[in-house]
Image (cartoon, rainbow, N blue to C red; front, side):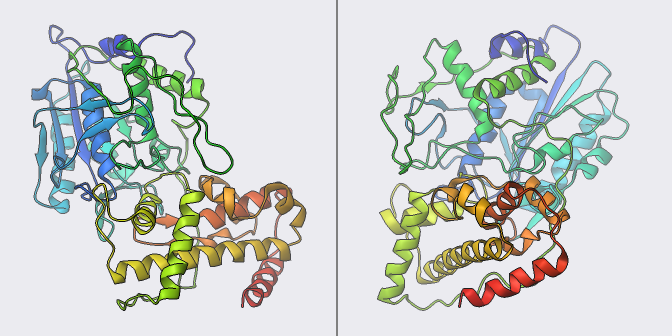
Length: 470
């Protein structure tokens, strides 16, 4: 999967998408699965991914369709680190906006089937999935945080049955690395057990996108003779230092020029993997789907009340929200809703953020309290299992450890060896899963030698840990 020689992304794409003078054709079918992409919504950054990928592929308009179930024209499309230079996409209308998520779900699969059946052996169909991945089974979700429809890997394979052409599947969803299949070639934004991170939320909340898009941005910078910008380093206190010299400044931007449809497929993956290797991070191609962890029997979230918070509760909410921002977790689809709400609590309703009502404040306070409680519970369990040395080595579950990514693969391994970290997972909504405490305990288990935990030892440790928190 690694690349031996370097070549520019644009020249690579000249071989990915065939020239219109050749007889072989490249089709593209894209779907924006989330419907929460209006100004101020949690998933608005996914609309940028949707627009940027369409721009990246540069397929002919009459051979491509891009589907969504809500307007994506409420905000700007920018790519680039919030602290650095950026590119702006200003495409003419290209998207097909459908009236609802169920219609989006069925229409996309119907088009996949129709286009795949007309492919010739020399043709290519590029499928683009932008949105959320299920934390239960890795399926692609179509809908919002309240209700969604699942497109599984098996469903997509079924709709591609009998095709004669080549299929390329590009997915920005979390856990998308588990979609490897003999039916297609897969560049995925995350491993089978991993979330797909976005760029950290900026003050304007506009300059964000999936980390997968870093490859596109860096290449555009190189090809437009602009030094690829880099943000300053972040110290242990979470403060960012001065960034290296810029070319056109953080308040300016470069308009991404339309791309000429040309080329064919393999080199895009080589370049993406080269980019991944050069930065030593992310852009995974995993081999197996994450299995759902056992569902905890306990209830994670208390019933929310709409009453106004007391002064002491307001102060507690401010303290917990400030703590989260000081040790901000990786900006994944799971964490962005909480980060946005904490930004509103601490800094007020600006830059498109609306104020939180009493019910929302109560919910955020309850969720932050529950997170703190589960961090304490994970620490107590580790202590009662005799893993103090590993805790001393790694540090506790609070502070800087709050910034670590959720390692669902390690959680799965811990579960298989009797360390049932699934007890510490919090389902904050049908699509938002908080796993920081579970991941921390899995890391402690790993540092303690990956020993098998007998059931009686686990039950005893959990039982003794709960009274300690009273």
